Image (tube, rainbow, N blue to C red):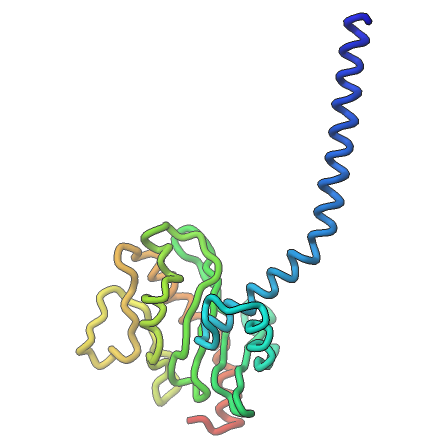
Length: 221
């Protein structure tokens, strides 16, 4: 066999192998797409429930699906487009309003949820499920210990002015302490990003019109 024939044979075999592998990868991607979509939806539901304190982090799929059955979804319009507010109920009564939030950190867009009490006056939970902040610094935003510091904080004053804030070095003796969450140590810009994110989404450009509407309907204040 000549050298040219050998080279041609090698190229032919390589081409066939590449073609077969491409087909296998393409078919696998198509077949796995519905599974990946289902897993993303399940992960979203899990993070929402965990952020609101309605589910343990290690809960099973059955627990996640069962917990989410108690959630009512309400479409709302914000300055950033259509969003969904999630309303948790127990025995027919509202226990949590859960709001999806997103905002710029130091290196990334942070995605999470903030849960409020039925009268919108207290934080019931806070969580982040996606971000790219610096590990060990801003990357600590999903840590349970820090997120727990949001729980019970006041949100609005009597005039429905949003007072909740995330600041570095909050003073427990301050008159504003009940509205303040101490920021992450060594992560000033990420802390500022979380603060701006909360302020935006609980403002007139975010969910505040919805909040006011619910208060008017139910006389929550």
